[in-house]
Length: 265
Image (cartoon, rainbow, N blue to C red; front, side, top):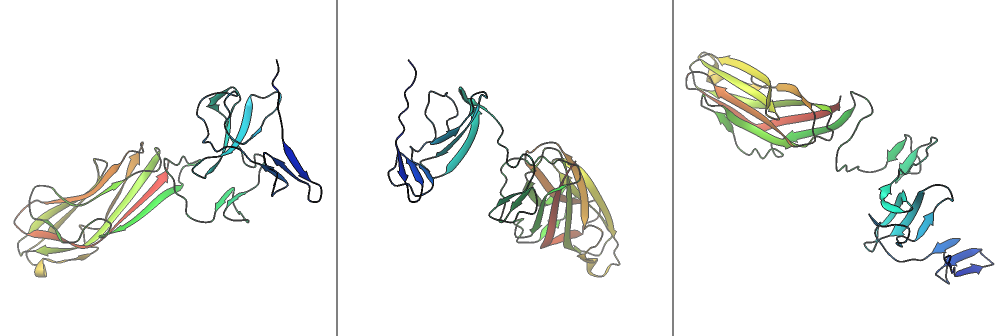
């Protein structure tokens, strides 16, 4: 026996409003249904959503619904298997799409902030994917960091999460240092990204440097380099250093900048 469908509608001849499951439509076409989140399994036999568009020949359908958490949803899927999903196209023949704007100037124009959870897959190499500008506050650096040993010491560390699994990550660090002591000393400073040493600076301070020297832009810093990235796993970016000789100290003041740029490749 075939299915029997009962449709209850209300038509207001003055305003041509039609309602399904309501006698008080407020729009030209008003459909009232049950709340439900988009089902991840099941089939056509399982009611899910408020409105459906389909054809007689294609297996795909588009369902519309409202969940009990008060978010609306659109889901494309197979009519007989809700776990089989299909693409949803906006302006497939061209035209711009706007979010929170009536005047989109690009294929997608968003008026406001964009929050991405996951990775960004670029269409071409060389595109800037992300920029992070950090100072001593972001790096939890509230006091002077000191190199006073021939054992490598971490001055600054930051955990960065790449937005793409195919990118290059460029890092530049700068800071003010002071050299304490009067004897001749050699120091090495390093930039490390994801466990890889990408740059090393060497500086020698002789005993005739007044007060040991120091200042921004001196040989220990700035230090910069890049890392070829192939994952969206966290990367530790660190600035380390060591003393190679004598007994002087290299002191990094809490006035630093760390710039991270991620570019597609």
